[in-house]
Image (tube, rainbow, N blue to C red):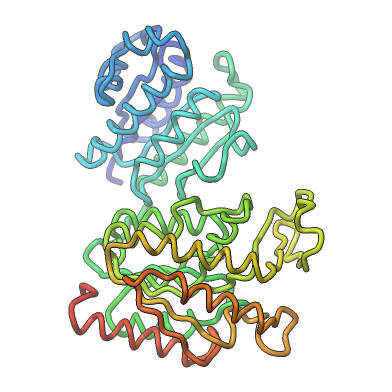
Length: 410
């Protein structure tokens, strides 16, 4: 088995023993280790491969400036910026294959920045005393971050924390050995969807696109799926996006915790990737099912999808606000945008005769999209439902035209 190199990051002035134990487990399993110290006040027992001075300098600052700030939060943000930039550069230089960060709240705050600086697919592990805690907002989690609770390890080594640390060391090394990174040489289509009980276009579109020589990655529009989609979009990973479930944008507009972030529906456009967009399931806002529902939704129809997720049905004015949000986000695009608006509905449950059918509110939404959409986007209003064959046919018609004229790079 080819040895892999793991970047181990932490405050070596206070966590020297624990970080050393992590490194020993990794090397004991045949891996290699590169160390990065993000301490401010103290020094490690032995030099690290990348010192705290290297880290601060990478971010355009110094350890003296961090100390002079007189504030631990400011100091750690200096180190977080430097660690993020340094880790990103080292990965570009192929200096490591996977990364692991150890910390309490301070180290975890830094770790969240570092993991977000690395491309999707790079094994990234955080060993934290606050793993899975509500202290960690979803929008700060890189889409493929793995977290392991650092149990019993706040002060020094013991058998309890060694169990956590050894698992984490084995996990990151195993991930680095096993990972199959995305193939940059095969053109990739990014597609957003929900399950096929709600949105069925993936069934005809995926094989049709694969037959045209493209790989298709379908992302689940439940917050973290959208974050992964937007992360790859920002990297320019997609030849074209089929963004046909934008519900996460409505979630964000309405304050739901199930959010892909404020940049949903922007990153493909920012890097010029061609976008074919349809606002699938625009009429629903998903909220965390095990939390009390905000009283502002008391008068709304609700559906308890499962114990994790509850869906709120938006009224006409709320739908129009979501329409304007689509237009605002797409107005930032630098590449071509085609928006498909099926007149007969945008989710299986809003078909005529189904529980969520509301022709008047649907028409108000479509009209608001048409009225506010920037002139840089082309709107295609078609007489079908999003789950009809005619919708998939229209998407492929636009895509084939873009492939023929060179808009989509093959």
